[in-house]
Amino acid sequence: MLLYILHAMKAAGNWIKTLKLVEKYFDAFLYVTNWETHQLLLRIPRKLIDLALASKYCIGDSWTIYKKGDYLIFDFTSETEDYDLANL
Image (cartoon, rainbow, N blue to C red; front, side):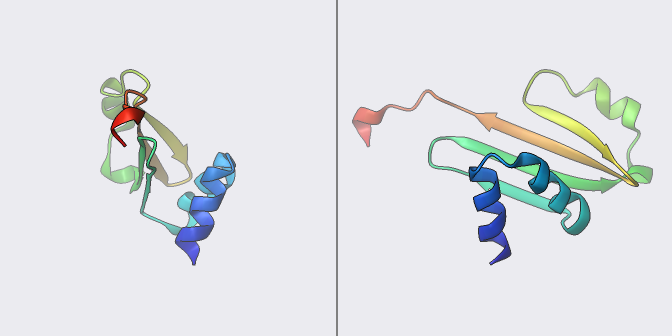
């Protein structure tokens, strides 16, 4: 039931509410669609990772780090639009 709610929120574009749920209740969140959008969120305690060091590797649009309280939330996203509809 909870996974369905998160999927509905993500599908509706309500990203802030989804991020808040992950921040409060989850250590990991996986979102996969059939149109080639893949997203993995990982919530890691701040004391385990040096933010300055991790930020050096955060290059490009494929991932982001959010600071939320005592946690860092890593957002890994891949969106590919190179699928061929003729082969479906």
